Image (spheres, rainbow, N blue to C red):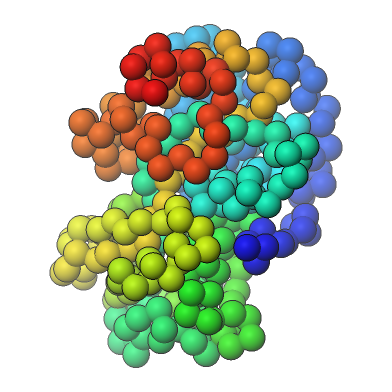
Length: 317
């Protein structure tokens, strides 16, 4: 289980981020601006976080500053350390971190689900790679360090015994990975995000690509260690040249808050998440019937008491 999130804080800029966050932490925890960790500014988490920050400002007059970070694993470290009060994280990363941490080191709880993410596995159309097993010995981008993509990619690969010992794994961000695939510098890339990700749409318009499907067997292998994965379809026509539905491993993007946030504040945050679900429908590919119940579905860690109170009031919990 400890194969995920073993990376330490090595990326440039993290120390500066921690120092800056420390300076404002006390202010945020005492009714001022809340700090919300997202991910790379070119990614979906950054976009969603800023959208949600706008809703909180409009609905409950709560100011939120969205911070660009390395992604899910880094966000949980910031939450646990008390440097931010909210974060968007991937459900499998949250589950693993919560399960292995001592009670005194957790420091965060769930608010609710935001949208389903799918783990795209992409190769060039002329590639001889047709399954996860075929990735052995190949050069693969698994996403940025401490990102949710890295965690999911390693879990998928490990289900087939593929590690750094028998494949060349690179930590490239999405843009650099797409360019590397186009120029033949890597054989495959992993990219976890919403169905119809802009970076993949752009890649498919510039390069002939193919998506690698996953099977029920892939899912079973992954869920032997952590039962948080499921399969979702990437509908035919989502990306240029994609003529068939592609089954992909999927997880939830979820909103997590610091346990230091008071119950009333979290209740307001949760209320906004529930009430604004339909605003997320287009972004997150949920139909309107799913929009309300989705917030409490497939959440692998305990809810914050403020979230529970809100859901009980709405008859959802």
